[in-house]
Image (cartoon, rainbow, N blue to C red; front, top):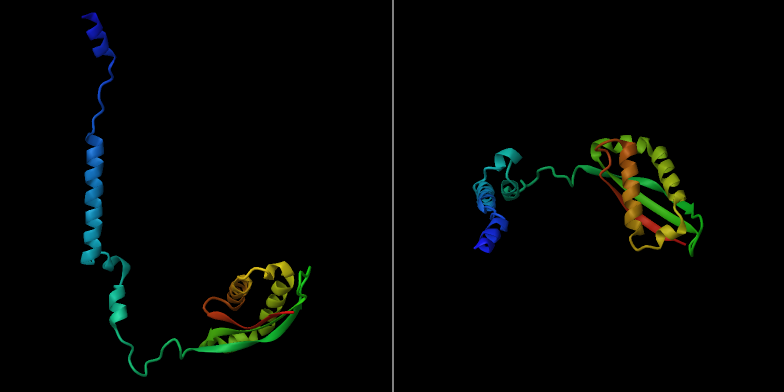
Length: 167
């Protein structure tokens, strides 16, 4: 009889599963509420115009588009001697900047500064930097970032690489 009393006293009390059930119910309710808010369009007022409305509107014939509002500013070709060559010693590079039409003269005016930065970046590269197949993509991204910084916000849209020859 005393053994039964000792066993009953040493067993820990069982934990309540109520917090787990409450958490599960709240998670399901939150998921369902979020789903309904998205489906009914309640979030569109927070974000702005729905994406579907913008895609449904056809372009008017003769309307000005982004394809009409740009110009290309040619960057004079550069030939750079690479340091620590692996198998190539020179890089011949030619590119153009895609700019909004209204900024074409401003970007052309700062062309010496653009050439200076391009020369400095390309001369800092080594032959091993071009061994990777993604070298052109990396060089283009670095140069585009620098061109946008030099020209100012919104003045350079893209850098188009016209010639990238390693000899």
